[in-house]
Image (cartoon, rainbow, N blue to C red; front, top):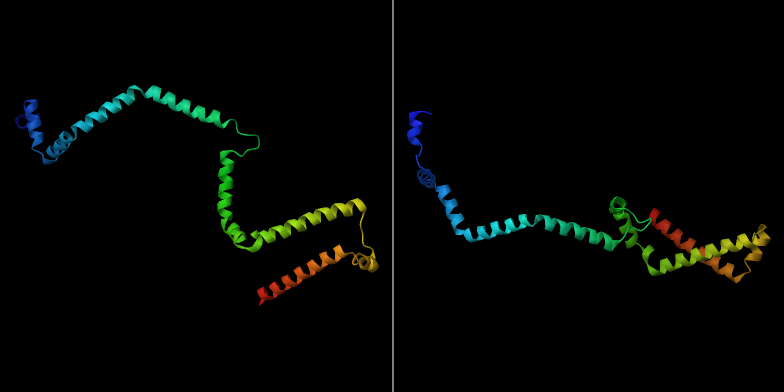
Length: 175
C-alpha cells in the first residue's frame, strides 16, 4: 500500500460511514431503509419463524399430498394415465376443426340422430333375423313377392326418397 492510499483511506469506521453517506445513492437507499424499518423488521421476523418451522411446514405439506392421494384412491384399472390424457388432449386439439364442422352440421340434430339410431337398430334386427331364418331372395319373382310386404314397401320407399335427396345435393354440389 502506498502512502497516498493510506492517507486517502479513513482511519476509523465512523469515517468510512461518513464517506459513504456522501454518495447520494447510498444516502437515498439508507433513507428508504429507515422509512421502511418497521416493515423490514416484520419481514425478518416472519422469515425467521418460517425457517425455524420449515421442517414442520414441509411435513404438513407432504401429509396434505398423501391425504389427497388417499382421498382419490388408487387409479381404477383401465383408467388413462396422465401422459395418456395429455396425448388425448393433444389429439382432440388437432381434431377440433373437424369436430366443429360436425357440430355445425345437421349430423348433430336430434332428428338426424333419431333417424340414424332407428336405421342402426333396424339393420341389427334385420341381420339377426336373416341369419337366424336364412332369408334369401331368389330371382325377380322372389323380389316381387317381398315387395308385397308393407314393411318392405315402406323401407324401400324411404331409401328411394333418400336417394332422390342425395342426387339433388350431388347435382347442386357438382354445379
